[in-house]
Length: 236
Ligand SMILES: *Cc1c(COP(=O)(O)O)cnc(C)c1O
Image (cartoon, rainbow, N blue to C red; front, side):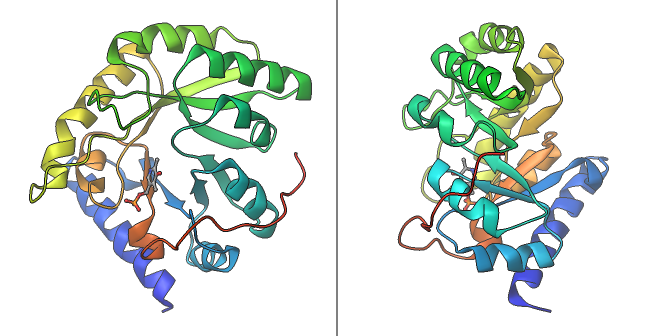
């Protein structure tokens, strides 16, 4: 087995075990391999190992890799600058980092212009962490309602990045209450997706109901020195 295939299998095993503990079907959980800094060849290796969903946190990196890695579903994870929305809308990408009306407005205008419907998740700052993106807990319902009312925006669920755990503490235990909060919100709002869980805390995320886990390091190894660059592919 290739090293990439071994890493993917190890992560899938963790997802299966966590799903089993929670009485969930592991097929309800999609593994999004977060490829930031890694070259297209590394992404192709995990695709050969069966991964079908790839995430990037920079619009330019996503645009550059998209034409070089085929047969995958693309995800933009994390913060999205309003002025960079034009680099991803129209690329058939699920946007995980929609957290303000101004960004929704921009996405709606761009999607309408291209004649597409843009799929989004509303990012929530469940831990009220100033270092993280996401709207406040008190704003979620309003933002979901606002986005859902747009003709060219489809709200598929919620996403969160919990605060970094304190030194020496268990990341799963630290993240779990935040994941539980996001699930309650998702249920109350009647949405489908829950994007939560990364390399260090995917067990708690799956046990608390994640439908999308975003795993970088444990799939690709340590991150490279900076973003991978290349010319962008055309908009869809
Ligand atoms: C980088 C990143 C991940 C993956 O993080 P790892 O700890 O490397 O698994 C997940 N979500 C977002 C928003 C990221 O930026």
